Image (cartoon, rainbow, N blue to C red; front, side):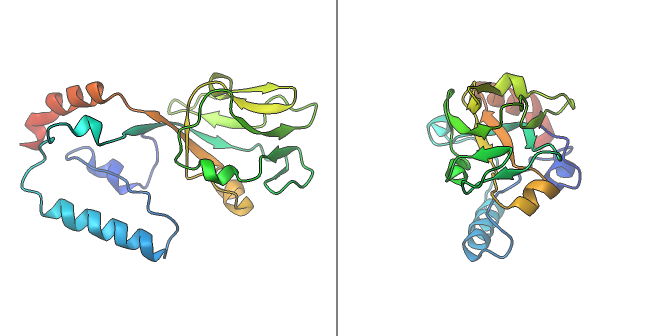
Length: 184
C-alpha cells in the first residue's frame, strides 16, 4: 500500500531506495537509538548489494490495508461492555504474524462489520480478512497487524492498525533487478 501522503519515504521512492522505520512512540529513547543506528549503518554502506543468503535473514512485509472502527460504534480493550470488545492484550499482536482463525474480539448481536478495512484502491476488504462467527471477530487469513494501538484517541483520530502480509522475496528480487539501472 503506497497511498500515505506526507511520508518522506514515498516521495523518495520515485528516485531512490527508501524505507519507513517503525521505532515506537515519539520520544522513546530506545526507538531513537534504533533509528540512529540504522541511519548511521546505512550511510556507511559502499553499495546496495543484497548479501548472499539474505532471504534467510529478513522478513519483508507490505501493507494491505488500514483498519478503522466505524464512528457510530463504541469499543473497549479492557473488558468493559461495548459494541466491540477486543480481547485483553490485543496489543501483544502488534507486528506479530497471526494465523487464520484467531479471535480478536466480540461484537453485539446486530453488528456484522465492526471494522472498515480499506486497501490502496479505496475498497473495503474486511470480508477478505475477517469474519463474524457467533459474535466473535475472527481472522480468515494469516495477517500482521502493524501499529496496533489500544489508545482510544489514536484509534478515533487515525486507525486501529494497519494490516500487513509477508512480501514474496522472489518478487522483490525481480523488482530490484528491474530497477537496478536506476540505482547504479
